[in-house]
Length: 117
Image (cartoon, rainbow, N blue to C red; front, top):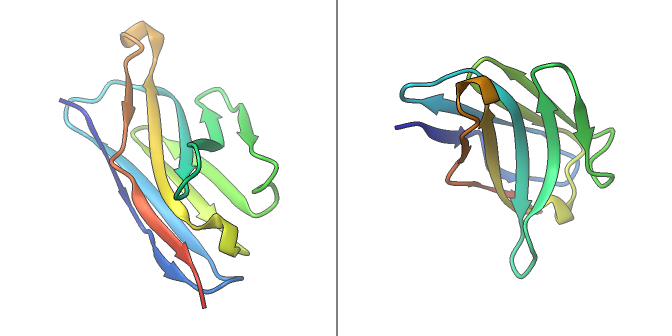
């Protein structure tokens, strides 16, 4: 049973930084891609950043230049700088196993990020 566990969230002031981590536990095959999503109260879930094992990386326009996604084996990270009030949300990691190993996908349980004074 594979589980994704996020860590690193919390309360930060505007302009501050946080680093989110997501680690896979259990019997893990190689992940092909990772993504971070977020969901704010009353809003739909949106993709923030995505990275693949072959080096393809994308960011939502709202976080370009401020957030950085990185991955290695069974972990993914999201470095968040210059945080804004509107970055407040529950952040979830999403991982997709390499298609050669079945292509299963997994969601983390989510972690709260609050930007406030």
